[in-house]
Length: 405
Image 1 (cartoon, rainbow, N blue to C red):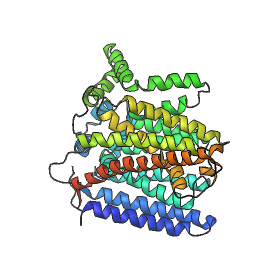
Image 2: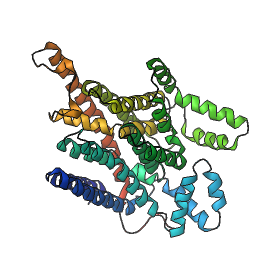
Image 3: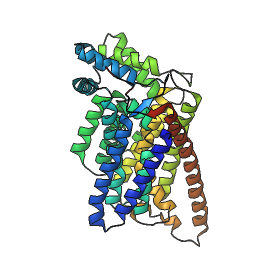
Image 4: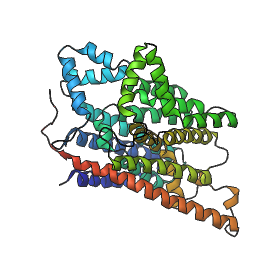
């Protein structure tokens, strides 16, 4: 049985578990959903642990397993210097070296990533911002867009990104500033690329629309500006900047869409993720609720990530990476879109005054735009997920580990 089919069957079973849990009264359903999430995360994590690349496929685990071997052979200082701007990554890899199994990192990465991301739709449902059916679909969509082969085999980026997205959500939507800031700092020390999440959260609190517009304009040039800053500080002899510039030179291919292990299909998937985020934001404009200031800040944060992604279009890896950042940040908006699509009105999907009367011509015009945006969203998201799930063909399930030390 192919790995793609196995993953799909597990995904459908996950939907069934959540459907059964949400059928109970709310007080009972909450505890059952938590149990279901634990089961779902554990199942996908175990599958990740036994997911092996086919012969000839390259993954970051090739490099990570070598680094685990270096630590076990007394070269921990080399790894610490290599990850000087990501010290938690060095500790993460060191933990695998302590256990003597680099493959445990895949299990841990999947657990952290899915656990953090699946909390978001649960919290939205718990806050009664999305309906029961929308919660189930949002959770399943969250799993589907996780791109487990890329993120889990990337080892560091997947969990770091999920922690950062959760931190931003806790601050902007739940008002849990202490835990949210802690999560963001952990993410930045884990994978420095998540610094853009921290920046976007801070900028979202700017009160002046003009000042926020200026930041959005500069966000379009973030990729170029950050590269030039790294080059400038590296020329001044700053070690951290030199290390960062070295990574950028490998990833930032200005004027060329394809580099390293990218293909035109992976680049297309990046465009589709960006398109999905743009259409989701436009749908949110129609569905935004009155009197909820948290959504205002989160919408600004999400918009800033979209601008950063648009600015990375001339590059290779940054586009694919930042489009994933923005797509994961869109999870609450996916829930709102599903609630609207399913026709379940509520706090999360209350329409603006323009659309309160079906007899109003502006209502029919607005509805036409909304459903057009929904169709475009489904198309873009479908293409992106098709590519991500197609990458399962590069892996197979086996108890015989491909990476060992």
